[in-house]
Length: 332
Ligand SMILES: NC(=O)c1ccc[n+]([C@@H]2O[C@H](COP(=O)([O-])OP(=O)(O)OC[C@H]3O[C@@H](n4cnc5c(N)ncnc54)[C@H](OP(=O)(O)O)[C@@H]3O)[C@@H](O)[C@H]2O)c1
Image (cartoon, rainbow, N blue to C red):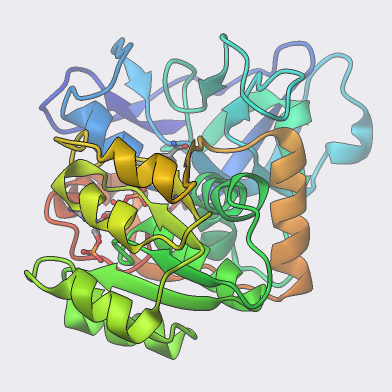
């Protein structure tokens, strides 16, 4: 098999020929047809992620056909078109993952390869309305958006939701899901073009977060959002605390801009705000996300596709985040 291997940080991934995979007990081997990138893969290549142990095959998202089943796995998966839940060992609680929770693609070898071995319990049938590339784009970002919006954010139809940094892979799913759920969705972005794309997907409008007065304009046009979905944190977080409706929820699944330099706890308690963290999702979240995507016929937004061998080009592009939606690797 071929694989893009991280040999050391701050260096390009290396395309390697390796022996074919054998499934262990309870595992399957999936012959991949597409894999998708997440910001996690970029952070790892830059050495900005805990527990990096090269050599490792990166990649959390993949879609393909089951080519081999290991001992103890029923024959029903053999030859099936599948997508893979990348959250390994979530555990029993819905509220949070277990201590030994892992994400496919570090430390366990991931999907930037022609084959991947995973526990059969991670498999789901590929949604029939999605291509290989669309299916590969869905798992990590889709489940993160779903849990942030619904399981943690408790979004209800008719509510106003603000989603920050709409070009992001998770953020575009959050936009599609919230629109499908009947929410009034507003977005922020550093790019007017991306705001226009969001409006085409059903957003009411958006604001350029790099400008001085975006929050004032947001309060005037959008009112006070009952739910804010944020992955930036940083200095911009203070504006979110000011904007949230009394009794509102602010859900963070990331902190791309670092921790907020200050937090106005007076506003937090006076306005009865709920600041909620969210990470990926439980097996139940994943199954509910797939059900939601199939019910609403949602298709992931793919910004660009690259052959597996060109994976470094996709990672390089993530440096400046020009994308709207996901980068996908095609696997021949
Ligand atoms: N906890 C979890 O389970 C989980 C899961 C997935 C991702 N994450 C984290 O969430 C973040 C986004 O992940 P992703 O995969 O969606 O990344 P991505 O696709 O690479 O998203 C990048 C986007 O972030 C936005 N952004 C950057 N700086 C910003 C700022 N200061 N304010 C507002 N938006 C900003 C930009 O949006 P515009 O281009 O529109 O300006 C950019 O396009 C990352 O930090 C990632 O590590 C966490």
